[in-house]
Image 1 (cartoon, helix red, strand yellow):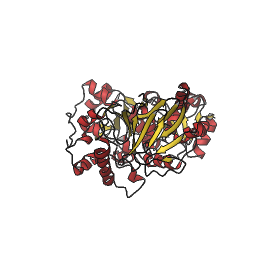
Image 2 (cartoon, rainbow, N blue to C red):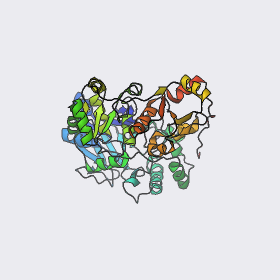
Image 3 (cartoon, rainbow, N blue to C red):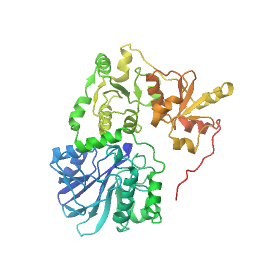
Image 4 (tube, rainbow, N blue to C red):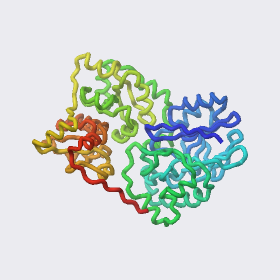
Length: 472
């Protein structure tokens, strides 16, 4: 049985495509759907079903646009209540795609409607399971997201449901089945996912902590809930978009692709209270940018950071981008529900400069320069990596101020002092400084190359590495 995984690394997302005898199905598609349509055309096949494993939190699914463009039917698992026409499967319901059979297995826990799809080939042999966020490689889906949409679904209740689903629905399945999850390492939907994106179920039973048969239900719940950090603010908003529906991607593209002159850009940013997002590389941005713009580089985890740092998906946005990458930026914003990109600056940052407009910069130092300053003065260092990164290893006396929680982190800053800000390699520190500089902070200096450069210089005293503890 041929199953094609379509993996998008920037949001650690996996969609799946299967085709047999002129019929095709897509599982958990992203919002830009033309590639799926093209794939089916290549096989001379009609997309019959769009299977959703659950109402996603970390991205807006492409199911509605796929239906409009192909006539396919949407399938959700039991208990789902979408605000549009869809098949709500019963536990164990079978669907035919050509001579393949898809069996819906209700596996609540990550969410209540979460469903695993068992893939059965034309000979009746069970091939694999598309697990959504129920089972990852090395991890399972966090059970604390649904409560942000339905208050009485506590994380403890959901963790208990997940235990039952894994023990009663997943673990009894054949060890030879291939596990096809919805996410890989880097996704915020789990806490310890492997870099591998498929595996056999038998191997996962051996190595995945959540499938340890020795864990009692109470131990499982404690283990699953330990170490969870609050989810990004856009997660519950994406869930509601996936439940209630959204504008077509074509509409979003047409709005976002508007070319704005310098004067139009200024007026629009002011009159609509739009956030200016500059998507150029951090090392370019620091040398000159439009005042009060925020740098979130397109070549990093762009969509995730936008979702983490801009709390409202309805926020108006105007863009500064490298020439030729404007549509990519709009697409990646729309993937996570930020549909109100109102246009981009024609000619980019250079057009702003050519019009003689005021610019801003971020001062930077390299590791050697910072080391020299340490010899002659007291230096305040801010480490904006995640707490887990900081706890593993950090510069002695550096203060942890995670970018993920910037509103809390900024409270650690004394505006009468100067701070040298670093992350792992230089991406997040510039994001951090650009946001605070837009808020009036002028005492932050970027450390080029981040912790990696500081460590490689061998001129800074580090804490010893401490391996994170687990309950296993």
